[in-house]
Length: 288
Image (cartoon, rainbow, N blue to C red; front, side):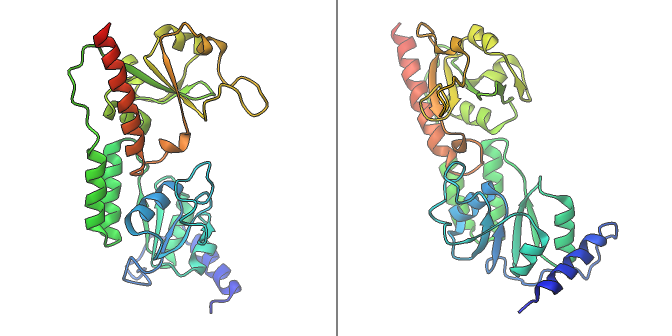
């Protein structure tokens, strides 16, 4: 059994070596990447569970069992929850640690100095990025066949209709933020048949947009956060009153943020749902 004091000393030593180049002697403590896997990011949690289930998972991120953000809360309820902390992770003797490319550089370096096998998975900004991450994880976890199945699933929702009018969809957060073209939600919107609002206006990156400007632009579909409510739990409006205008031709859809904030195979469900809305609107336009 590893003593807590020994772990702390080892981690502190690794952090103190942050300015020292990596040496060839730093190697994985275990060679099989499947035996003791730790995931430290909610998006990676979901990808790994989709690929290998929970059998070889030692721990998952602290948000993995929070229904507000996670699709896998039930599956991981009995697993240990961790933050990206070198001491805690090292104590669990992992054979593979999966972290986001946005994770703490100091912690990543400390773990590698301790001989822990840390692999970075990039945050997905498109459906294509999800496919790439699934492929990478499939190789790391010896789950290449399952990875192939999941990437085929992601490619399955396709729209094949004669477009008579370009339809615009926009995801609008209650803080007035609109994601740019280079974002996962915009990629999902495009896959479902719509043109994203950001692409329509030429916004590659996200920005804040006043509700008045949004109303004037009149997108065909407005994707709002939450569960069919313009008000918060206290009864206060979450969105500008102009968006409530019954005369507006814009259709409002309330979609939980967790359905599009993470790059996992679950986005297929959202693509399919939006595709249905697209087909309905195409039919209405063709009939008018």
